Length: 423
Image (cartoon, rainbow, N blue to C red):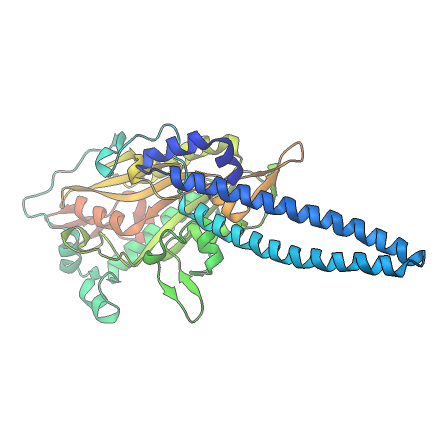
């Protein structure tokens, strides 16, 4: 969430940067400033009444001490009026605060200055590619056919148990999935991340803290009886560990990694682009999260990108890195890099990771701060990235490594799977 003070001091910048997202925020920004003016005016009136009340209390005490009861009682009538006026002003102030907060919730984060202009994924910048695209044999199959052929994943059984988008992993498919999870966790721990096993359900405050609410409310599974949401990613519970926390500069960098199942309704998703593992309601993901000093967050973003590049290189998958344009960025992000792997059997790129710097946007909602060397309190910067999301990684491994005699397992996974091929 953007800070009101920042919006006031940088009105033109806010409006101009949000144009990168193809948003004209002029009306909303002006409304925020008007409401903030009303809030300040109401606070000044309350402060004035409080000062008058304190002054009257002293005068009334002196009058009673001097025996001037009648005059003291006259002043007490004024204190009653002040209490009534204060109550009205406090209610008005609360209403203004709620309205102001709701308006602030509607504004997305400001894109970093290097974010390219654009309206959709077609306008994203390809900034890096690595590893050759494999040439498959004439009878190559997409992963959903391979999964059926080798009894790795049962999509129909998932439909029977839960519905579409809830696959059942079986045999070597389940072992390969588990191997990937452990491999990703081990690499993150080796890179200095502390492992977290967070809850899979969060409360409303956690959803607002990281920006899933109210923006993505329709995409989250909600349990009204308990007022809890199933997590869409481990980012939500892990980042909320630091909600309402004041850190020290010496605490930086805070590096956490967590594996969780993730749950997304994906309302309106259908068609050939969501077949098999391409888009699921429940999927596994290893997430890396960092809480960092504002001066070092973009260096940290680059380091997180390098970490994910290392994973993809070890898996020997063809991949590319995209810098997302303003129109394709997430609501909370200031700068995002997407990592995509090439699915040879489907002949298309599949997103497997988003790595983002949120700057102070989440921290302002979370009230996650630190004391600098001068003792001043500042907001931290938060970052996160998929390292990695498993469904499309698994799909690409199956498709890109298939031969006429079976599927080869990437060498880096063999110590985990205990087998080097599926046939």
